[in-house]
Length: 421
Ligand SMILES: [Zn+2]
Image 1: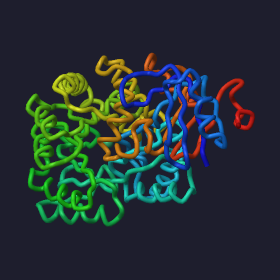
Image 2 (image 1 turned 120 degrees about the horizontal axis):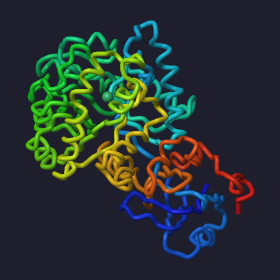
Image 3 (image 1 turned 135 degrees about the vertical axis):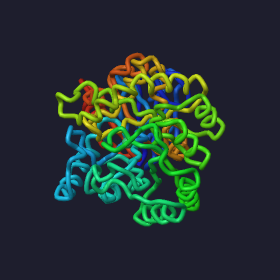
């Protein structure tokens, strides 16, 4: 089945350019043609594909489906999200399913899960694949690989603790056996962990290498949680693909990241939400206290990272307290409002750059011929006002893998049938 999307403005994600009009032809799940040059691109593609279904998106800006490179699909975003015990495991799965529907309808057609309680991410991905629930394309990590460390019991079922080269080798293989698409490790302590010292290194370089070697055998990526500079450098030298957070990165760590082509996923949204709601909102006081100390450091390090040429991918850390799964685009808003990226670059961090960071650039991340048809249409122009993306109601049309999963076009363009050729 061929579909023609006649667009208003078009942001393909390949550059920062916004085309004033365009049209895209989709066959099955693939983009087969794009016209951003003709006077009337929709009509031109209609002539080329006379049998195609025709969708009028001319009142909207069209862009690639958004990609969030760092979420926790089974954390639910409430202040007590870490307090649940095993009794809640089944509820977690149900909530995670709901969260994935919300994420998809917010315009995020791909997410990379960076740590899941008891492999819930793998079940939820399967539920999406079988069509039991609506959801984005999900890259799964299974449990987070961590050294034996204080405070890890706070995250019931989230960590797989291991030590030594052979210990990490086994722990990595376990996640891969369960069906993980990537491996996630703790290269330093954490903020959202009562025993965590964010600046402190955890596994040494050799231990991280054990994880990387197992992942690379199966052509999978490795994401390293790392706040402190030494932990970042250990992870980069060991061969990881992305650094998550990067809070206390020094210049040497940024230079190493550029040299190794490692992406930084800064995850600014949780700071924003947890600082906003604070202890009064029930966020654990040890988290709020640690956040206060490092918020400025993180923004300052990120500014230097961008200056040094470190590649930035968007990751919201959705699921952490008050960071609900339909608010993934808040990350883009913070990147722009803190003066770190232009709206166009911020959107590319959630399209082209996230696709590259996740190893999906051949098939996703831009509106380009032969890529998978993940396309959204929104009210307004997010390159002029990034806030457009933070309100789910502005996301009018979502196509994932060539299938229309949301169609709430406004006004006279609302009917699909009346627009059919
Ligand atoms: Zn995280």
